[in-house]
Image (cartoon, rainbow, N blue to C red):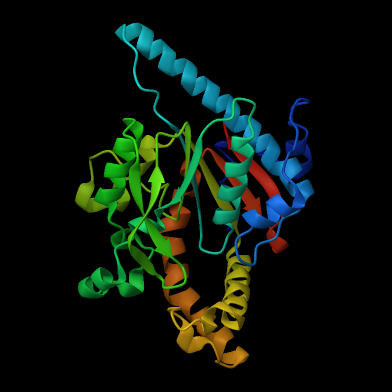
Length: 315
């Protein structure tokens, strides 16, 4: 995904330079076991990666968090009345298979460990996909993950309510096993100090959803946005590797949506994974996900083996 014009609105740092921004008071409290629990399927990251990349990122977000709090205080003083403090919302976007889930889980653990011990919630936008039955009804099952496949009005209602401090909000749960929204199962979001929202669509705005254009949208509620980036050749490799590993175990479960591929020969499985990538994920990446990259506050650019090669911070 190299773009010679990409760095123009950004400061760009090497991992070594970025690691030097860690504050002397920052301490990594996560263990190898903690990090292992954060890893999404087939992802890789070391304790040094967390210390050098994600710990300084946690501190940067803390500074943004404090700045936002100070602005809220000014507004309250101006209005002459107290208000419910809206949660600080962090979005994490990027392609399928790039490692968004791992980034989200790591930040969730690091932010919880701040000295102030904030209440941190983590959700994904997958729960706001239309159920498969509805996608089939609309004839858009082959566009799952595209803007058209999301119940965006329900997602927007949730974001409005969470910013308004409404307690005990229900977020639908998505199962990657059944490849569908789970009926009557929810994650409860109860007035967090920080909300991390992860998904391919969290940097999209009203222009990506013509039916609600000229209204507020997801990006209007985000306080700090992260885009996890990688060349498509790496994304394809990671997607195929993940597909093969899932085929070895998860696909054996009869309730798995992809159960029919469990005993497919490896060569056929590789061909199928690449075909799915080109027909669905490549199209979604080029048309809907990648064009949003420059809207992010920060870009984590990955190389081979999921290693962060550079960090771009909006000026």
